[in-house]
Length: 393
Image (cartoon, rainbow, N blue to C red; front, side, top):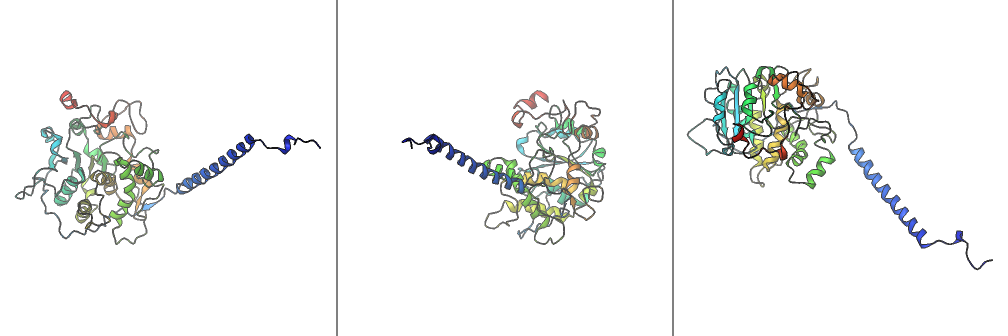
């Protein structure tokens, strides 16, 4: 026998290293395969035919006292014009631009950060909380019996803003062109935006309860949208379930259930859609906001998040759930709950149909489901230049 081993009997160091690398790669591949399987399993498609019990606000406050009525809009009773409810802060600047709309609307302008006037019962809010939501809810509570038959339009207080769905971002022009009766005709509620930018309407937007959303909120806690989206499922359960709900509809969004909604909390609503809910429900919803600003040792665990950006954004998802007409062939299922698939379809109409219905911009060309060329685009960094108002006024 030869003193030298044959190549088949001898392993080189390079071959051993290659085998170790191969085994390590196979182990890593198997590990990532398991992780991928878990992600796909946890986010597996589920039936869209879900009914949610989002028909009544059931939140119970822990507060012993409720705010006094100081948000009455003067002269509203008997008004034949739609109310224009404005939520503004002092930083929004000159509010005289609303005067040019007084022939179209009954003006109800709330300045959330104005000093309290204990001698007045008009146009005040109990706290500067929840962004525009506090003024909106205060109007609904303190003027509940006098909602105009012509409806109510809810808007922010800045005339020039990136979220106003006009080519030059002018809310005055938008409101002057708004056909309120046409906007209310299909469902009794309509968001004032038609373009889907910054909304959750695109199917590519991750569901609020998904692992992707939760991970984004953890990795970027300064991203108000991600944090709000992550908080939405629990907030919906707290608001519509409270401590008493024992019904058959679901309360908590699943991992693949998405609430599709337009951006930015400017909308029009019919009187009978407001009256779908009792005054006490709006009181409870406002208390959810106020309770969230209380000392953390005393506030309910079901109260709104203390971060005002998050609490306000959650409510921007709630309006259409509250106001879109409930009943068969609309947002409500035959079983008395909200049909999520149907609700989403109503909340996100085609952009070209929306522009025609709301603003008379019909027969637009170069449109997709979510946009029409030349009608709107998001400005860089979601911000208008500082001199925009001076140049365009």
